[in-house]
Length: 520
Image 1 (cartoon, rainbow, N blue to C red):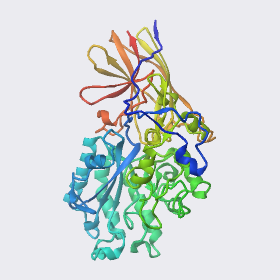
Image 2 (image 1 turned 30 degrees about the horizontal axis):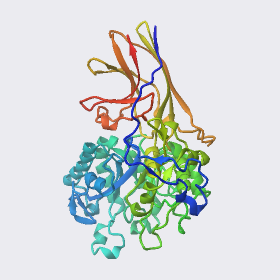
Image 3 (image 1 turned 180 degrees about the vertical axis):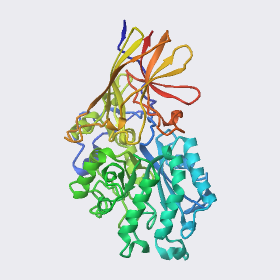
Image 4 (image 1 turned 30 degrees about the vertical axis):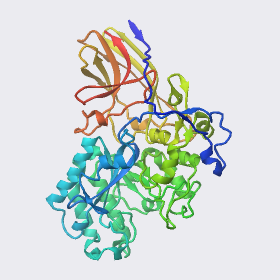
């Protein structure tokens, strides 16, 4: 018998210029972050770990009928799409793999979506796939905001019967591209699809319309994919065709994230300590949560102040955020996140999970920017903590301990395979599909909310016949959607460490998390 406990060295990150930033200064005005024993650690950037369904997101908008940006007529698809947004928001390094994609059905408000409109929606999906992106997808009609800004608004405002027909018309396109949808947003109603300021919600049938939109969207996309709601009150008021979906398929999009500190936060943000906050916290571990800060506009709704760093992390942890926007408050809070640091002592003090290896580089303890830390911990971050591999009599016994130090778990469905990679030919043998559900890989015990990292163990024995030689052993986690299964851009990557290295084939089919080597 040959026994291996693997340890593979690697270069953990790609570094840029090293600076020193006092770690507590950012929050000093709010009474937190001072007295940090790690305050003088050198701050070093770390290469993004690009994974599907999670992370920072961009924002794009197009009309369905002509693929022109309603707010910038010079942007016709693909102009203004992912490539341009990555340049504008400095994310060409792989920091973003999600876009909040608005598709405005304005010209179809009172008629069927024609074939050209459906083809244009498909073009957007094709562009996402080409770039390795997913969409937080919202359909709407009203892009102009106040009705007086558009002389045609009466002809372009939504109507109940047409909304339902449009969802049914779009359903085959959504189902065909389901792997490219991180989450649907309820949308369709009101200004920018935000469920306010529309005549269709003014009469006695308003709740019936809301019920209809959500039920038809849940029917249009398969289980377990989520539809995001704006408020708990919206969700609570619904009458659902399938009641089990209330807590398993209805997520939240917090479009007014201010860490509860804005003067108008009550009733708009999920303010810590409120009923809304507690409801979201109780449901969030099994649904998709995303958010965005308000623009720093000169109005009562604008956010021009820095919000609490500590408060932000605690909310991301409690509400299990999978995605967050970096476009709307880029010049204020996002900019400051890039210029402040975070250290293990600060995180430990505030009960924010992390893996020790995240703060070690070339054997030295380092700090990371707050921006990088949030980027790398939105959604899931899977760490390999221990590996045991034993071969005997043509079988492989394995035991692999994992932790998840992200804010959330793996919400959308993924398969988990144990694979072998031939040392001679770099061919992948899909050895065994493991009977595990990554959605169970919670970062901490959500029943106790004790904020202590959980260990998740993959173990078993698999027969290996007809092969000999030396092989890498790895975990491959592809998309369930058949058109993306053999697309390495959409496979889940674990965090690099002494126990884990990444491997990709030249054909772009596999991205494997290599956890050891064995010989047969």
